[in-house]
Length: 97
Image (cartoon, one colour):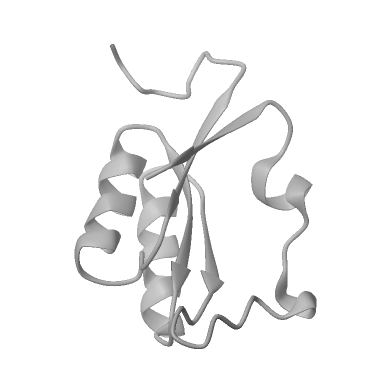
């Protein structure tokens, strides 16, 4: 069964922790190639996270990178939190990966 968002009224979105490097980065990019958008976290490598967002855009998908330090459990500061509509839009389904 193809996992392409084209022609579907539901946009598939995966949530990936640690998506700016290594396995998480590869997961985000693989999902993008399969037509799935991503929301992913990164700890401290903002430049790498922004690069992943750019690579996802190159294949025609969307990704949102959110800073999150799991060691201190500090949430994303309120000023940097995107709204639900900005991240998910309407008619979206979130899949935890």
